[in-house]
Length: 199
Image 1: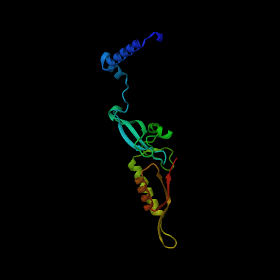
Image 2: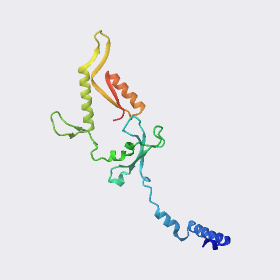
Image 3: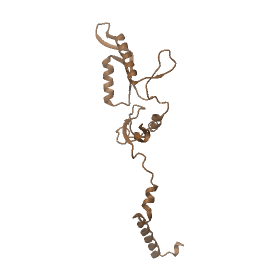
Image 4: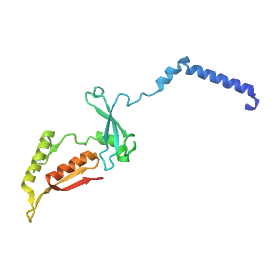
């Protein structure tokens, strides 16, 4: 059938098609309204971006968390999307499978949101306040250090060693946080100091 179409007929049909398409693109025949109605609204348009660090390993990939406004969620902000930070020098926007599943980690119903305490001999955990938990941890550390600090060795040289308590640092922290943690732990005299790399 195309064998019967002359060059003049083909060019005329193409010109007519272009003219009709151009009229539609210029706003005639409600093309713009139909096109706008077909576009799904951008889901992150009214969210708040917060940059953070992935908590999983020592690579410390940068992430961006997107949270809905509190007014849209019954007065409580909620994270609705997490992705890699393209401006982060470590991962340049990429995430490993564990990092890509961070949203499920945040929304997990079994995730602890408040500190819990189980008294010696008790079978049940009870929720406590952050102030109570931090005060109790500080009290135990102070009592243990006062009781077990070795100030001098057998030769009488000052050593200030605290050997009965250990510390575990987080690899996903910044260099500055790591430096402060190291100074605090070593300043207290603790020798048992390790680093969480990939667990």
